[in-house]
Length: 171
Image 1 (cartoon, rainbow, N blue to C red):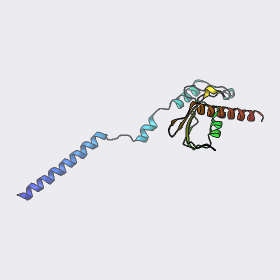
Image 2: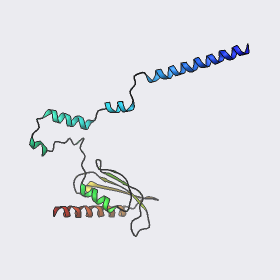
Image 3: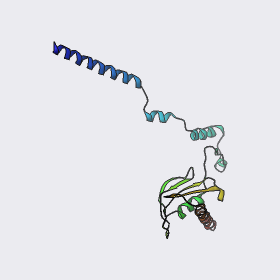
Image 4: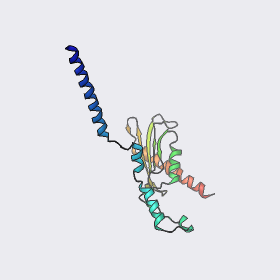
């Protein structure tokens, strides 16, 4: 009698396990798509804009010189400010750099002859070589750096950017 009860319990466990497996399989749906397939089906606004522009107008040689880029999909940064930021803050390790958005994140580094470590984030937000195109956020291990220090770094980057531009204009 005890054996029959144990066999019945074993059958109930097997049936319960199979039922749970069927339930879980039914939740995912058969024929579901993988993450890669879902990502491939998503639309890319930049590619759609380029394709629409190509299909709307006939292409000619002069289209190479026209500025037909959509400002909502095209971001530009000043290359001199970008290079000057990397040059002036070369004592800090670069953690992240995105030339499309104009953001450079630096890790902690100690300037030559200094005793305090700094961390910086530089945002180049415009293609113009202008002070308004540059934002520098400077931090120390104890908090934000003084506004005078941030302004000195911004001035050094702007000065170096002007030097790079003058050097290129002589070519």
